[in-house]
Length: 211
Image (cartoon, rainbow, N blue to C red; front, side, top):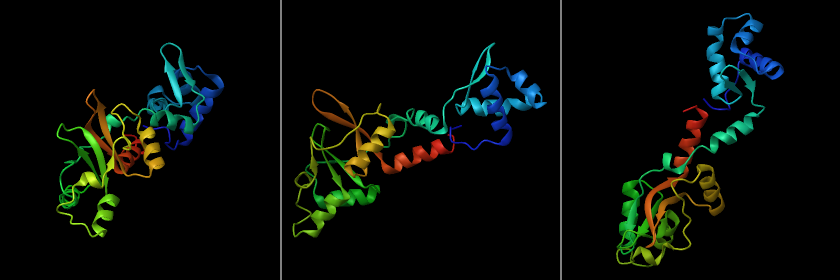
């Protein structure tokens, strides 16, 4: 359950009671509403899971004092790259632009990550890069992708333990569609996955639906 749920009248009444009288036990809340404790249990569970209320054993419920926006922000800060990343599509830096275009089409992706012989990240290819090369007069079957790709260290990356909200900021700031998820070593950066605008959208929709 997420913090942006729409509360019903009884849940709003419960919040008001707890605001004015908390900490207060579930039994005392039920008495004030002339209801049984069992009847209230689902409402109290929703309010607690959503973050509006907190509960302590032998003390009762109390109001957290947080707004819906604050609770949503807290939820966003619990979404990590490692939980939503997808499988990366990589190509060798020596493959032709023609083969890269075919790979992008067949894999149905908008970004390719370019690696060297040691499988370390050396660059990124976007749709725009491939389209720009296609418009020119160059022979695409012999033109290697390392000629047209965005090279390291100009590649924007993220790690598996980064927050999705931080990745979203990077995508917006750089006006790009995807980031490689990498692991740094002494030799360079190994590509572990990818985070795209689609991954972010799925995560935020799941958050809105309470999953």
